Length: 540
Image (cartoon, rainbow, N blue to C red; front, side):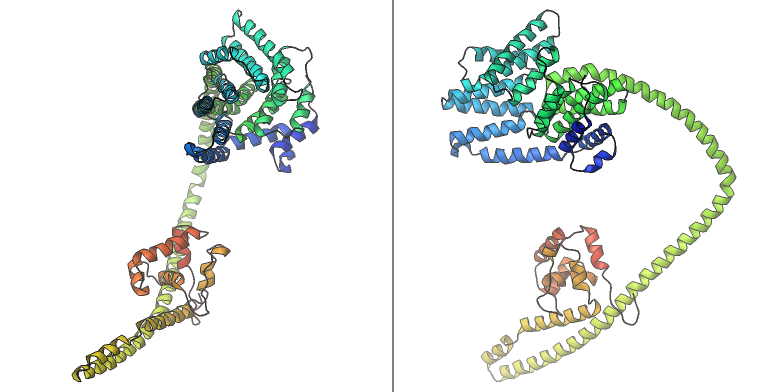
C-alpha cells in the first residue's frame, strides 16, 4: 500500500474547496465535513434540471431542425441524463438511433447503440445488453468507435461476472473482459481517459504491469478533469488503499458524484461500507440512505441488489447500537431526574418568588409599552387632524364659494336664454388643475408631517428600483398610494377614489413595488407604518 503524501491530499482538497478554512483540521475531517454539507445540497440537481430543460426546449420543434443539429441536441440531453436518470437516458438514445436509421447514417447508429450499451450495463439489464452485444458483434464497427466498443463490451462481461459471482461462469466472463480490455488498449491512445480508468480494473486483479497510485494522483491533478472525471479516478485510487486513506478517496469520489449530479454511482455505497467497518454507524447510515435514494432516482437494478446486501447489516447494527444507547439514556435520565427533583425542591421557594417578581415586571413593562404605543398613535392622529381638518375646512369653504359663483353665472345665462354661454361657463371649469392643486396641497401637508417619508420609503428598495418625485416638496402617484397607507387608508377602493384611478391600477402599483422590496409581505407594510411623524412639540 502506498502511503499518501500530505501534499497530494492538499492538492485533492484544493479540487473540491475554495476556502483555506478546510485545512485548519485534518484532511479526513475536512473531506467528511464537505461530504456532509454536500449530502444536503440540492443545488447541483436543480442546475442540471435547468440545463436539461433548456436543451429539451431547444429540441422540441424537431421538424424544423436539421439532422446534425437535432442529433447534437439529443446527444447533449443524453449526456446530461446518462448517469442521472435511466428512463430518460434510454428514451433519448432510442431517439438518436431512430433518426440515425432514418438518415441512413451508419456511424451515428453505431455510436448511439454503444451509448445504449453504456446505460444498459450499469442498470442491470443484462439480457438486453447481451442481445445488443450480440447484434454489434455481427456489424462492422467504425475504426473511431472500436476503442469504445471493446471497452463497453469488457464492462458488460465485468458486470456479468460480478452479478453471477459463481465459480463456474464468472471466471470465464472475467477472462473475456480482460481480452476486451486488451483490445481497447491497442485501439486507444496511452493516456485516453477511459483507458486509464478501466486499466485500474485490470490492475485491481493483477499486480503485473500495475500502475502505481502515484500515477493516478498525477492524473487526477494534471488533466483538468470534470467533477465526474475526478469521481471516477478517485474511485480507482481507493483500490490502492485501506482504512482512513481509502475513506478519503471514496469521500472525494462521492463529493464529486454529488456535484456532478451522478446517481449511477457506487462510491457512496462503498463509502458507507467503509464507515460500517470503521464503526461509524451514523455516517454509514447516511451514506447508505443516499445510495438508496440515488438508486431509486436513477432506476439502477444492480446498485439496488448491492444495497440490499449491505443495508440489513448496517440497519441491524444501528438498531442494536440505538437500543444500547437508549438503555444508557434511561439510566442517566433516572439519575438526572432524581438530582433535578432534589435541586428543585431546595430552590422552589426562591424561584417561585423570583418568578412572581419577574411576571410583575414583565406585565408593567408590557403595559408601559402599550401606553407608549397608544400615546404615539394619539399624537400622530392629533397631528393629522390638526393639519388635514384645517385644510379640508379651508378647501371646502373655497369650493363652496366657487360653486356659488358658478351657480350664479349659470343661472344668469339661463335666464338670459344664453344656453351656449352657460355651457361654456360649465366647461371652462378646469377640474384637472383643481385636482392637481389638491394633490400638491395634500403632498405638502403630508411631507410637513413626515418630511423623511420619501428617503425612508426608498430604503426599503434596491438602489436601482428606488422611486423619487420629479420635484422637491411633492409626491408621485406611487408614493401617494403608500403615503395614504401610512395615514391609515389601506383599502384599495378608497385609495382609488381619492387618486382617481381604478382599483386594479392601485393594486398593480402596490404589487409591483412590493415585489421589488428588500423585505416582503406584511413586514413591508409594517415598515411603512413605522415611518415616524415629526412633531416639534412632542418628540418621538
